[in-house]
Image 1 (tube, rainbow, N blue to C red):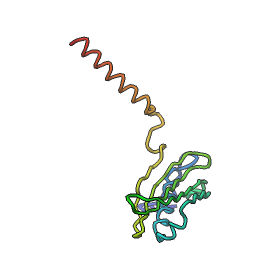
Image 2 (cartoon, helix red, strand yellow):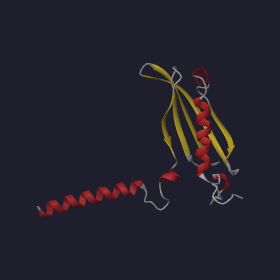
Image 3 (tube, helix red, strand yellow):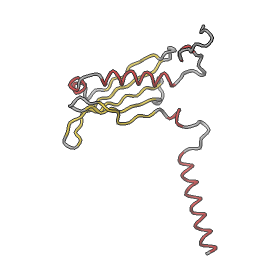
Image 4 (spheres, one colour):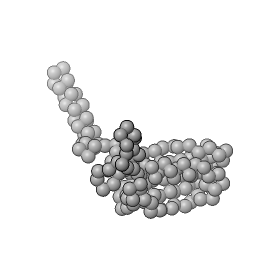
Amino acid sequence: MARPGRRTYPAAVPREGPRHDGDAHLLLAAHVHALAQLPYGALLARSGSAVRELVDGLDGTAYVRCTRVVRERRGGEEQVRLVVDVAPPGGAAVAEEVLVATPDGRVRSAWSRPGAASRRSPDAAPVGLLAAGAVLAVLLAVTLLVALG
């Protein structure tokens, strides 16, 4: 039990629901950091591979972490693209990051996705419905302008 005035670690705080996506982000960040520490030659040796691992979050919840490594050429220069995602078993990825490693030893994040669950509210309208509503509104406006014009 924490003493008054002391901060507790997030793992000590009770969590709601069957899983907490924050664990997926921590698992992703730890693995991305470990990959970024590897020399370019070691990453190049892994090219063409896809590794799926069962990993546990801080509260013991199981996740599947998938790491794909692809060798590619961009602008005449060789690079290695790494795609790492973390998902609950049998579910869609809740955290994902794409890294690009270059022969000079640099590793940079090319793209990251926090996961659809954290980006959109479950009550939000589907994107297609919003686009259809926008098109309908424009057509209605044009029709009114022509009729009044």
